[in-house]
Length: 405
Image 1: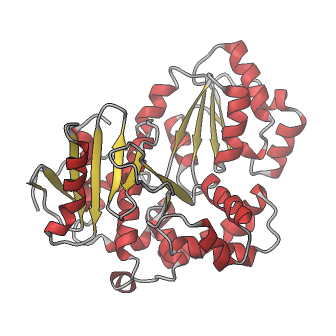
Image 2: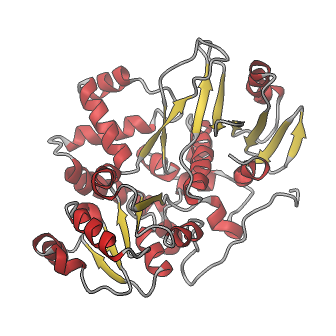
């Protein structure tokens, strides 16, 4: 293994791993009166904000009596908090945000309220209506490889594909085969019903499992509808639920006209590969190693790592993929309008010429525009071949070191 693979310096609280997003949150509290941290349940939002702002008062709207107080007397609920207030799971009382707006406007004090929420669409809708210009919104996903730091075993990526990155699996040393199925059950029984009344949860569960079987594929709504036995409109609605609660995300196609015959459908990915493995019935690393989805899950993990890096640094999602009608494609393309980074992702540990073919094609199509090209693969060596930088899977975010994207 080459020593020039760089990692961010990691620090450990006891027992908390310092999250990469911490610095950005502290920076934004000096500029905005309200900070909102959204993300999936159990991604570490509460631990993050309580450790980052230990002097602030804390309240959790999941508690029925607290929620009732906030609903019946919001002014009293929010008042008399000289050190600021952390409001956990704020989507449970969305009308509270109007009062947060009024108080933040009158006090003109930055960093006054820290909000967390595990349902994106509710929080974002209310923020658009009431807190526009007053709030900074950050997304916290489960642990990244960078955050796990020196504890990452660089010999085998299948362990991380199968375990996933939810903090309880690491903080409490819970077996993923024990924790993940219960997370799925709780999510479907509780969170889905909060978002939308779905009468047949068994069909919805089948739908989620079918999504796990389509990781890295073009999103075909008709196929999903036929296999689930529901309408296309229902599929659209259920996909929105999974996105709103940070189970899945869509990678959109890049449409710059190097070739006009480009696909228009997005690709489907999960925010956590461990969750996807559990839905696919993969219980061990041995099962995963020979599973038909191992390459897609590896691709999913790397793209999720790049997305986490962007979110942890307060950046928008500028990840795309490129594919023409002939099936020639680039797995991930980062575009900030001025420059591009192309990333090909292969789970194999031995480099072949086939791995580089898509990158070479895109460089030719984009010429004379300068494109930075990377191959992230299942091996452990960093190399440079034909203007393509090869990175090991545990160093994927090094693509951000060479280019500001």
